[in-house]
Image (tube, rainbow, N blue to C red; front, side, top):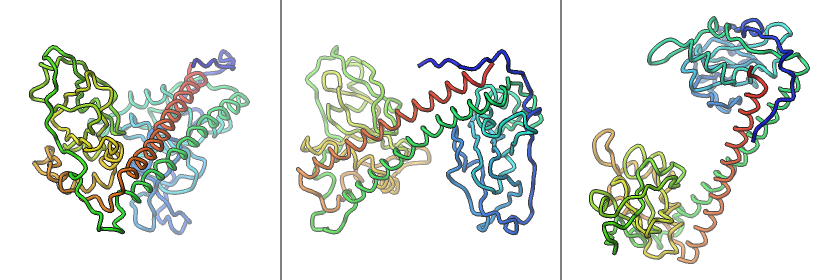
Length: 389
């Protein structure tokens, strides 16, 4: 969607960042006597988010002495490519790798400043002026030379209102996403880790074939789906199929069939959540990375129950403890999957119902993520239209 700017940019005057913004370098030696409770490091700031969701407690100890105040803007000067900018919503201390900005005089509205720092031009300038190999940093002296067009105050007010509305929309989507993810985890915990009735414990291998053999009735010239580890996301989806002749990939790769569950066994892919259900395979057959374990439900109705169990964070944390191999080449062994206990296994009909419910929740999660991405795209388009030359 193309957005047009309703503002007359020809009347805007060009200014240097340092003409309208000051770098606040206020320090305190005894933060608690000043009533400060929280501190913020770069690790607490999320890329492309203006909101600080995490922090440390000064009472637990910190070496930070730089003070920031509510309403000021925090900018991560180290590794500026991470795009860390935040509008402070409370007073506190921050890392020396964070610059603290506020408007100088009355030429620039405080509400617009965070968005100026989020523009592509400002980030490019910060990167171009950064020095250092491992941890490049920029300086306010360099940032102060950044030139940009400044609207009149009334236009600044209107632009800021629009941009904050776009930011608020993104945050609303994020809150719904967090609620859906929390719902999924809570539901999974109640199903997969309820050991109230241990008389119904079974091994995963009682309902799943682990790495079963498959001999497709295909000619070497027949086309099959080829899936690399890079084709599988950490959200549990296959995002790309390559086409290969069966003769080209039938040896030296993992062979699987329609409906199988793929489980990444190597670090860090396993810990990061890579896995998927193999669906819509060409000729019903897929070949791919040998770093996948294949989980084939003995009853097709168990497909989604098994998939969500294999994607569960607690399941993968347990798998992590049983990995074998050398550093960087650790893998989940087949026997972990074969011997894994499922506590209080529901009936087949209930397992199918659980899979359907988790599928519905997951659809909501994926839809919400798409809304968030679209909201971010709109906000970035607004930034380009309103705050660039």
